[in-house]
Length: 156
Image (cartoon, rainbow, N blue to C red; front, side, top):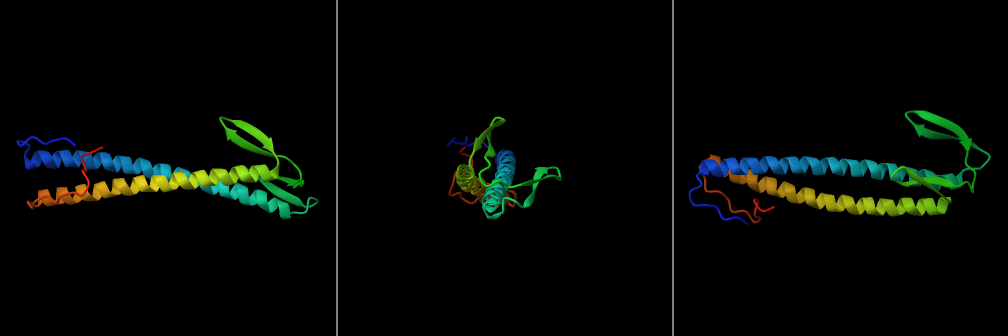
């Protein structure tokens, strides 16, 4: 925590707080974008796992439509023991059986959920700092004594 010099005027304090508020809002926006990416990835993984698990209930002789992306599909069949190709990062794809692929997708979903919870905590903490700082700025601009913050909004 930095000590403020007694010569800081209320106007200077408001300017400092406004700059800090802007920085917090930028940080919050970045965290929210990360949260959206996590949610999108989670939805993709969940859809893949549910589809993979659903293939076990499809008759191998029945024709299915396989989405390739960009509204492009492939007609084919769901061979019961056909290996699954699963991306493992950096453009590398591994071949594995359905059970292992489903397990890997489940583990990824667990990690995505944990990351989303942690990110949610960070978002809540930044939002709390924004709220405290906003209240302090409003009080100072209205000539009221600044509310004391339970968290040091200046400490990063």
